[in-house]
Image 1 (tube, rainbow, N blue to C red):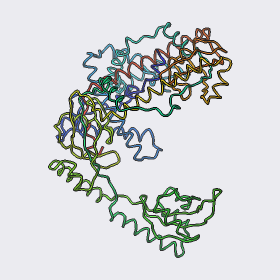
Image 2 (image 1 turned 90 degrees about the horizontal axis):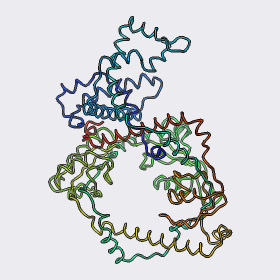
Image 3 (image 1 turned 120 degrees about the vertical axis):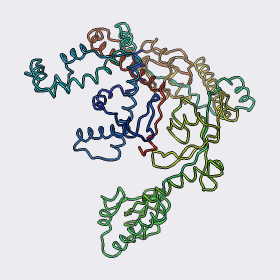
Image 4 (image 1 turned 90 degrees about the vertical axis):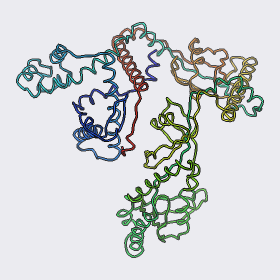
Length: 593
């Protein structure tokens, strides 16, 4: 039971929500006064840009206070933005749950909490005597330090409803000693094995006819029944440096080139001017053969003589000034060179970025008139079509994780064009709803290839089982391993296999194999096992029985941990279900967030 919880449980927002709840205070009034369009909508409640920004600034201040010596970079800020959003959604969902469960806090609750403060307060040095919490010192502070008393009461009032909420969710979670004992036995009933694997994937020359595929499709048609679905046709407008951007970098490259062909040391120039990762090493790229570098760079470097310096060469990475220091034949008799380079990266300027944004909106306007295929031809873009996506999905093939676009598509007609979407890397995407269907069956043409693979897989498995049965019938147990090696069969070792083991080598999880192994004792073979992934003969090298005496000694600790794990898993699932069932509209990308 608990092994399944451990395998599948994810640490969700519940774990960090406590800290966040305490940090948000009583903010949010800005959203009431803010007239701008909403940045997000959570269960019908609009979240303004100002409210999110206020929370983001608070989170950023907290980060700076807690990490005064840590370098501030884009990655850190992205993390803070995402955590602020995740916490904001969580608190709104928690508030919804508080109302639904009618959770309220009384003055007696507050007094009880003040009389039994949280551990972080008890652990403060000023409230301890010889390393132990001193209630008298704490009580004196409450009476004599009014700001502290007010702060602590406000903290308790803001956090206690959520504490009660979490306790109410966990309330019916109970791990009994019997459950724990069975889990312990399952974990510690183990075996070391060698498994002869009759692998279907080693079988070749399997033929699948068109008639078989058509018949399979008709007989299994319900497998291809799909919920209401949509598709997008889309084009991506990428942010790329303009010729003007390249020319700006070229001016710098030309200037440094003129210096290194006169009197400036190449290595020192690379250290000072190169924008590549090899700059600290003087631009040194070591020895390399053809095929290791991009074509433009490779053509230039292999055309140079030892000691020569190239004029600036453009590649997808920018402008390079290259110097060859040595040429030789390696052990494989391939020509290789030792070279260094000075790299000047080419980045799109703000003007270029602004121009591309304008192009994206112009393309969007044209797509609304002539459809996206024709607009793509006019702009020399490539229009692609996604696979079907579904209302409860989060991902669109070719586009990525776009929950808002999924919801939008289901609310619009075929031909509707979505406003340009800014992707994570800064590129723009323009998409048009190209397909909508209610409950439907996938066309045979869409699934034919998959059906062919499924039939081929079934046939290979059938043949592998036939081969295993022949081997089993014609081989004595004492000869299994020797004959298996002669036949080229794979023998896979597994150590510490129990009922919950995820895999035995490449076999991965095969429950019937694990179950059968554990019915045998050391030095025994199993009978032939026909599984979903092949056929098996297993030899049990060692068996390990659960140490129930050890269990009794550790029982209280294990019971406490199992209870905690089960409660966390319950909270995780509860939160995920709550989030899935709530409509969340995220417009942060429209604000550059």
